[in-house]
Image (cartoon, rainbow, N blue to C red):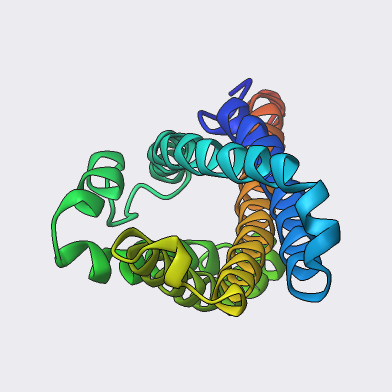
Length: 212
């Protein structure tokens, strides 16, 4: 095993999540400026518009990257945990089933956590993952509710405090996503290293002469 299936896409996802977090933090600052000093905000309004468009673009890119990543993560999990109950296809496909997708938001991370629990070497990261993923799901749902609210309401009628709260929620979601990605990626790296060490030791064990 030279490289994990999810390794390359995981690195790309990590970078894009950081970029999204930075631009969202900038958006939070811009919204605060709008609230406390509109005259100053008026001078940077064009910049704020660019930031908003860029965040929307990154949000779409993250959606695609996450789908690819979660598919490949489950390929890796099937390698290390043959009894892992979620297949790569189901891990992605079931998110597109109306209503059932809400259940799937909780089901997938719960099963990932359960599989990680079965290996002692991933215990630390499994603990972090188990604590963080429920918060990640909650903030994802809240962010989705905000997006629906913005989609069905004219921006001129939306309070600046609502925009600020939505930005903060999305920023927290991105930070949680980075932490969860870190936990899963490092767990898989530990499993990969352990598997390689086991495979390297096996031939040596086989060649050891038996005592008469």
